[in-house]
Amino acid sequence: MQRHVKKRPNIVLIGFMGTGKTSIGRRISSQLRMRYVDTDEIVERDSRRRISDIFAEDGEPAFRELESEAVRKVSKLHNHVISTGGGVVLKEANMTELKRNGIIFCLTATAEEIYKRVGHQTHRPLLQDPDPLAKIQSMLTERQSYYAKADHMISTTGRSFGEIITHIKRMFRKNIGNPK
Ligand code: S3P
Image 1 (cartoon, rainbow, N blue to C red):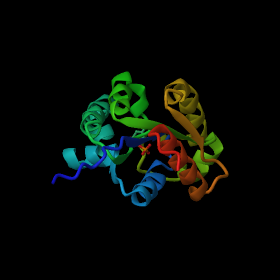
Image 2 (tube, helix red, strand yellow):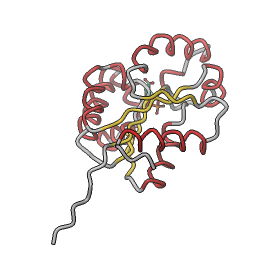
Image 3 (cartoon, rainbow, N blue to C red):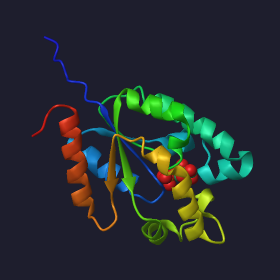
Image 4 (cartoon, helix red, strand yellow):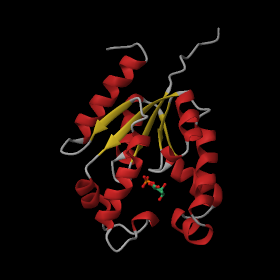
């Protein structure tokens, strides 16, 4: 007899760089026994290049094309936790794809908090700026209305991973009609 496994929708994490999508996504995936994928990792794997090299050699629009390809791939999945790059929201088509099988959670943090978490890191091309805090502030303002298209907004400032994960799991269960 064939066993019917219920197809759970994906948990999709969007949000600005440094809001914890990867760390939180990996933990949720193991707790809920869902597989984990990350659009940035898919771009790097498929192109065999680092994101910083793609930006430097071919520019941001080329990266955005590869990112959209990765989004189209992951949007066909079920039962996955999908972590995305911070700029995935900029194209409406990406959001339409991700919403097809997914519930979208946007992780948020203040500009100061993001700066503390990632301001010193060198692998994010968009933050290699003489004044990273000002850059974060202006990008957050520009992107605010895009992030607000998520199904749920989850603040991460001053909250532990455990608290954030409990919140996301609760919202997810409600969304899929299993409030336990
Ligand atoms: C970007 C965020 C990065 C990566 C790329 C561009 C952005 O991902 O996709 O550097 O436009 O915000 P993370 O949010 O995982 O750092």
